[in-house]
Image (cartoon, rainbow, N blue to C red; front, side, top):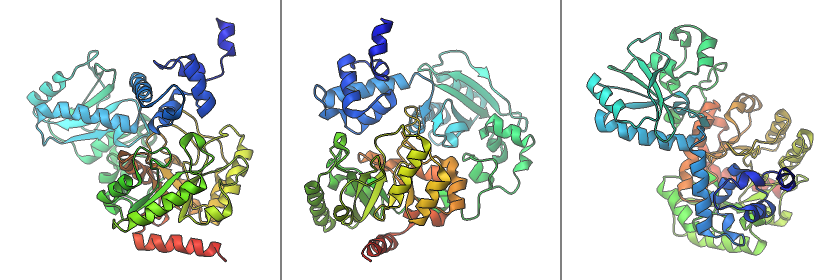
Length: 475
């Protein structure tokens, strides 16, 4: 048995853990799509990539996706979007006893919009009878235990336990809402609290109402012009949106009208390029067809439609398509979808060459990571950021909760280099447009100055910006 397992390619055994994915199908998925982990498989299902494989189809893809989601729900770690969904369910249960208008605050990792959440933490207050009824109504897998008590507000109690589905939950409760500084202190990780090792007065000079649930980098104080979602609002438009021309689930018109309904001033359509054959990447004739459809649709809608492409960054750093085709687009998102395991110098050189290409507008999901699925590749960040700034290429804050890449912890380097960033949903469906807020949270955590966020521009400025870039290519 051990000898047989040794002959199976790496990753196939992991894929075979998914119900409905036997050896033959697991080998096919790896061979045709290059998938070697459950996390990659889940992402491929959400991008509708399995439906084109022989022996699969929508029903099997949906079955596999449901099995993966179920497995992930039992490991005790959740992506932020999964944690938010679980928290919403918990909050709804609590409100049955606290009242529909009860104030329930998400704190801890989920309140700070951590990419990965291991415990759902919420704060609420009420009468003792309300609190007792609310806590008692939840289906606990095991008994509650008292968690750390606040040294600054003794009436706040921390109760921790696992719900019947295995989700770890901490309830912070009090008869009256504590002041914001105490709540901020409850939100902080132990490591952050240890670093400050004192009363909340140590936070003097910070905006407590902002840090209350948005704690990020204890060693950086946000600049006055750092992006704050509540104050500055969301982005004015989004790029990196897919349609059913490649691997999206919605039509061009459905995506455009959904973006318009959400109040965006513009949308950038960027389906996969021809090298991404597994995602039905666009051949030149399909590009022309899509361009014509965009022109016709533009006459029917108020939102501005920019026509782009997500061009694969090839192994040598070249962009997919000939120069004549690249020059015809309004914008280009350059992304890596293959050859992830190059060493740092080779990958850095590959990216720098791509960023030196005058046609690239944005660098998509810069490290290729998939949260809980695949580690990002290694890069010399100072070198690639220097190339991005020199060529006026925006670094993508990919808002897809499977990615949230570039990592917000690079905020200090992005600010130092004065690199432009663009917050994009990488949407493969209408609902995927709503992921944009996760990218906005990450940009806020990174403390990116407002002026460096490209798509805070209103539509007239964005049209001018993209037009001027194209004019420079002609000279």
